[in-house]
Image (cartoon, rainbow, N blue to C red; front, side, top):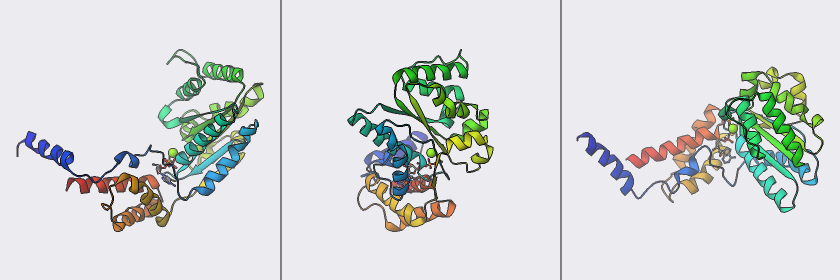
Length: 272
Ligand SMILES: Nc1ncnc2c1ncn2[C@@H]1O[C@H](COP(=O)(O)OP(=O)(O)OP(=O)(O)O)[C@@H](O)[C@H]1O
Ligand SMILES: [Mg+2]
């Protein structure tokens, strides 16, 4: 078969297949499911921790940690999105900004993202981080709101630039008069606590929420729910689902790994 025919064959197979996937995107890492089985306790605890903002009080700073793929990002986004919807309904002056520090890459870009989220534009270069921080602080104070800063994969910030930014954040309320800030720090590096300046650690972890790894039966439930949306009825056997769950549980209870295994299994089946 010549090269063009090989690809015709490959593409036709996909186009003409009745399909294994109903919606492949449901298995993507950034898909945010409406239900998060086996994270009820963490959803409740984070919900309870942030709820005071609906009554006009600043909430505690919260430190969330647990191994990779244990649902930290999914739960945090889920809770903050629900909080925002409820705040809007009752006209509570509450806002939040979620930033993934690893994707942002630098302290400057984390600060730029925070500025953008309150409608302040920052040039790509030309200012120092300190100047951007001051701009953020001054504009935020003008808004008179309670602002939750969720810093995901915060260990990257700490490792790149020590913890100066975090230190500034834990002190920011002392210099604000009309707005208040609470921080949610998320890390999958359990040793982060050892690296942090003790003052930052104690301010940042006014509350701590731990995400433990999922076991095989929990991963099965998570996969089953996603599989219902991702695959057409009847194409996925219980055996295949259990195998993906068991392999991911044997590694370290990582739901992302389990979802990847399931997606790749579907893709391999699709090529047959
Ligand atoms: N309880 C759950 N129910 C459904 N999906 C889940 C659940 N927990 C995790 N997931 C899914 O598994 C994947 C990984 O979850 P998430 O990104 O929240 O992990 P994480 O703890 O933030 O990992 P990391 O430390 O690597 O950032 C996501 O696609 C997420 O939707
Ligand atoms: Mg995450």
